[in-house]
Length: 288
Image (cartoon, rainbow, N blue to C red; front, side):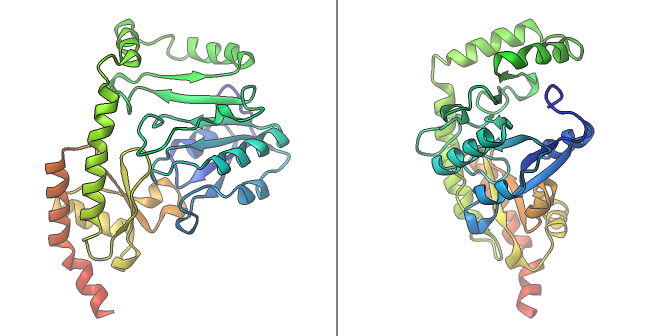
């Protein structure tokens, strides 16, 4: 984004979505323009809405599949429509594919597969998620050749390079001779099934199985409480951490996000604690 945006440019991004999309755009003097990922549309982008928000100042479209926080994997039809809009309006596409290897069924489809996308798409990926190298802070971009000089200038004048041992570790991770990522996804699959089942036992919670990533995106409208108040009760009374959905954008205000990147025993205990404190809102909702 530092390499491609100028002050006054508009950036289309998913809401709810990773908070960095809007804040980085603002920091660069650009204008972040959200498009909604709604439950009524299974948290898929609506190409018609995206099209309606494109103006002469629109410079970039950000996509994130599988998505944080919803766990949505964009359908082929949706991605194709977004690609066609990018080509029609000559937009850069920043495709955040950091969770691409963590999907639960089906084949992953990258934005690069669609006509006209190689010359306008930058893939963002890294090692924190698929290879559990979170603390190593290593990522990469797959970019059109014309963008590389700008990326190089930014890199050399900010962090210069990453540590050599980190790079060797990443090479070994990409080779993944022992299939560790596949085993990890298998374990996430079991955790996903358990936590979705358990969370749906909590009064007022409604959770659909995520299609990718490792987050449970929970509709809490049935509790009658705000997400902020609910998360405070969970933390202070149950010792369970969750994030209010509005942290990922205004359209997430009726949701909370849990990570299931913990052991199945820990996840089960967490939900048991939530059930115990659910009387706080269950009783209130019953009175109403």
